[in-house]
Image (cartoon, rainbow, N blue to C red; front, side):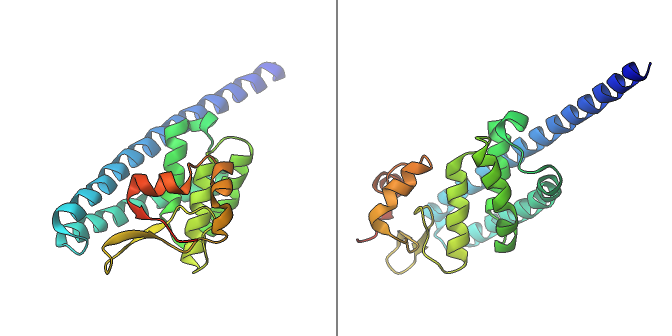
Length: 197
């Protein structure tokens, strides 16, 4: 009798956890889709109205609100369950988790980077996501980035330029180690001015 009761309780807990993961997965996927729509619209607005337009400002406010709400949703999940990997929530929801945290404050990035690193070590998250987060943290702290993933729009030159990159000579080796294309290909695809050696 005790065996069957334990088995029943275990089954109920497993089903409940599975349903919770399904709910988390669908929420993360919805946030990811909405965030992509907003961020793709930003490029169109910049091209149409300029970087300092009212239209872009309004969209940026929507993006900030979405990012804040999404972070409020995922923070306790990461704190209590760790960085949910691909095998638990799927590739898209896992990417969404990164996307949400990536746009947070420096203190949040510092708090959750170790969780992402653990997930990457288990092959449950994309190493390129970890590289993006590392670079973002370095740039936010005024330090040279490691993988060359962060860039900005220069209003004087009216071109996109990389934030400073450390040890530029070995950048492609580091990028390759996390599955990123060469800096030249990356910059060409996005119209970013290549830094000089």
